[in-house]
Length: 417
Image (cartoon, rainbow, N blue to C red):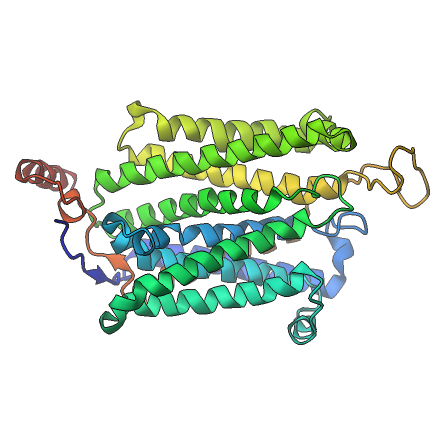
């Protein structure tokens, strides 16, 4: 039977930790400076126009929000599906979910141009708009996961963590459905109008969130020299491969369905076989680097128990995820509106014209700043509270671990030390 693993905070007094916090702080300051620059000068200094109203900040924001839901995967597996191997990782999973959502929402708020106008959005609701519902979904997610973390970290309430974890699991599925429905309900855009957007976003959240979790876990354990056994590494490797395969399958269904419908042939040609950046991002960014290579790394036996393979696959999945978000958000707006189906339209208002967009430095800086803010929250929280397991060695987490294997693991740990 697996041992009860203690959770401990990190000391956070090394040069590496201070360097990490300094770099993240500098990126946050850069993002705040970019937000001020765009607010002070107006959005004409960005690549966004009247045709492309959602730009690079929205790519980062939606990616972080979607990943936040998926980052809670590990906690859900432990609490809802009662997998003891993942229980020591549940607090870190919940922390990362909250941090990513806060980071994504920060980017959205700072991109409003008038962040104070958020008060209007929070006090006057149009319940015919999915955006109004998302305000409740996001704030509800933060509240539920905060209670979930409290149940897990406070020993007196550990017995209630499974019930709260189930509520968090259901809520995050609803949250990601709401985010995907933002695009699925937009019938005016040829590339958005699809009911499959909601389940696709749920599966993308599984892959993106787990990829970020894998990187944070590896950096935290290697940086604090805590044992990380290959049993857990192998589980995370296979789990990531399953999620990537599921996303790839649903993306294939999405495009095949659009190709079947004549009305979507134009936008499908634009995305899949066009002379533009979106086609390159789809086939190289998402398909090759974001899907095929990670699948090889995650599902090929020759990479069994390889932490390097898991980290490489995770980085590529994140890169592919950002490419996919860029295609959906920017590419979906770039394709001209079908105002009069079957008719050729032209006017002085860019009707019938493919809209151009080039992300500006302030937009990218704001997105990177929001991502840095999420990671800063995680790095600070693991220093002041007990979020990280003391050890994830095979002997600690694997109930089938033998005494002979324990001797070999101790020898390996001693050699690496």
